[in-house]
Length: 135
Image (cartoon, rainbow, N blue to C red):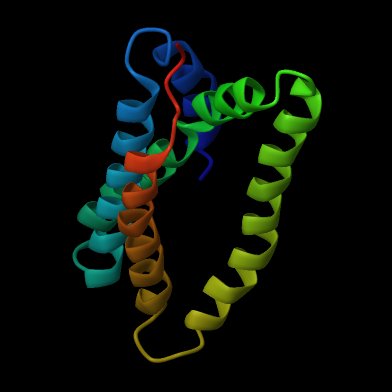
């Protein structure tokens, strides 16, 4: 997820050039693919590439999500941005220990990566219904 630090601002810049819906969908697909590869296991180089893909994809949609929240609540843009950030922090605070528990189960944490892959894949359905694009 350290790689997501670079893609958060990069995703914001990229959102100026591509449709936000496509950017969020690509990020979800990339994170789902990365998590799927990690869930399946494999050689270290493949797992490292999958982890990098997952981390990079995780940061891409943040700018678009903040902008969409602010468009939904133009009367309170700071509150909208804070809500999005709060959801991200909650996911990290709740998801990290749950993923850690999966490493105590048989499969060396693969269950956690499978759950992340499924969450990303199912979230693609919400992107179809969401109004992310400006104008």
